[in-house]
Length: 316
Image 1: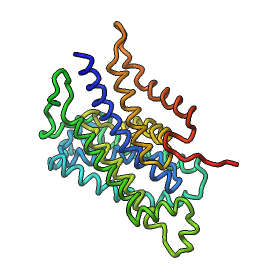
Image 2: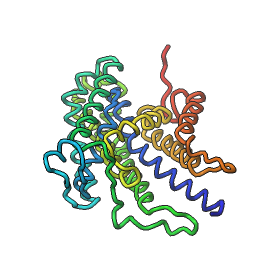
Image 3: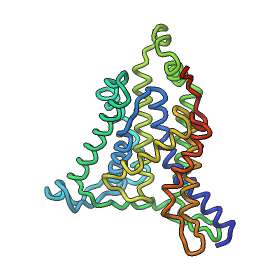
Image 4: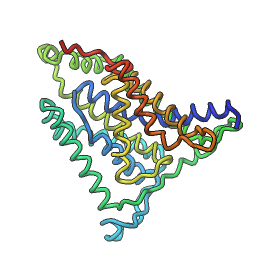
């Protein structure tokens, strides 16, 4: 493989991996930046979206767990990937609304430690429910037939699905960005973030836009779980595994900044892909790919503690 083909491969693989981080981080960032709520259950929404999408789009074979013991070993609707994404977005959006209304809202004025404990506990509960119901075996997800080919670039062996992940992410993040930046809804949300008391004095109820923000963030996490499925088999712990890189993306991008999350996700994704595909002599750097993203995060935060595009907090 030529140097140019290597660089193209690293770029496309990095953008694809970064796209998954971006989908998760944008949801986390708008919830954390707007509601100041630390949601460690975001990974649970990711894995719920993955399983719901798998059930609707393709189907799954259950060989262990309560459902298998009850005789429900073959589950699924087989309605296709596009229908699966739409259903996942709707289902996880509604779950996000319910989560905000009945759990998160009660903790908005509580310390961050309380928010972390309750959301992390909820994530563990979801993880264990999935494990005892469906088993801990990883479920393979097939690429959609319309995206099962390879990128037509000589010397570059990358599936078309990776390109579709980048495009889907760009579309969804663009819609969310336009909603927040260029609509009356977004204006109310941003005003509430800066001075919620003033907004309430103007007679505007913030509970409705806030719950919608939560739902949108949840829906992005759910869609991320499904689109990442063909590249990373689904199992009950997958949401917990990807939660930390998603939080790192939020922090180095700048809390509350959608553009920052995009920049950070892109940097982390390309860094990870470069380390995975780089070999020095006979030594492959792939085992250092996870270490690399935390090293990049440390360097960025040393230079810009508020993150790439975050706003500096005046603590005086």
